[in-house]
Length: 182
Image (cartoon, rainbow, N blue to C red; front, top):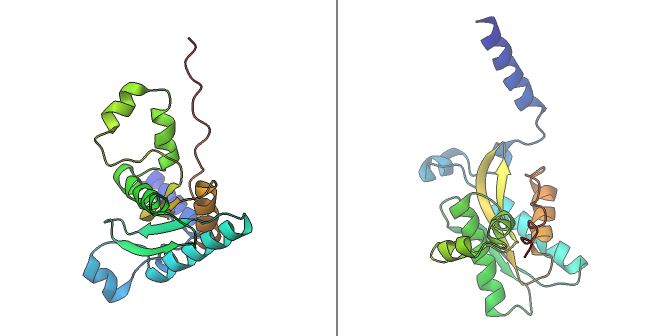
């Protein structure tokens, strides 16, 4: 019994020490009761999108951004000038892929790199394994997904925006595994 009390106290303290507060970033009150889930609020989604657009402008790139609820509904989207249809579509595909896999699209890209068999199996799945899609995590709960397309720093744009508005996020995926020796 004493050990359970210590574990419970440690969990409470860990929660108190966290810099994040999920209630600050999600739909709450009567709106939460109506949707019966914890999802990113429109206000937070707009702030993340604006932070990503600011990042893109600072780095002289144009991007398209989609932020989706955990059920796949568009909460906020933005297309910067100069984006062509494929830029917009890939941003949406990246966000949708995150919802399907519950992981970053970069992680999935690393998994299929140099693996033709896996690439063929995934061809029929709704997964777009190209970096630029990230889960939006608060208190270890996914409250949405972001997909950024059209630039050459899509993932960095998304990550910088998330960390500046939400706070700490899971670390980004590393480089893909080396190709097998021939």
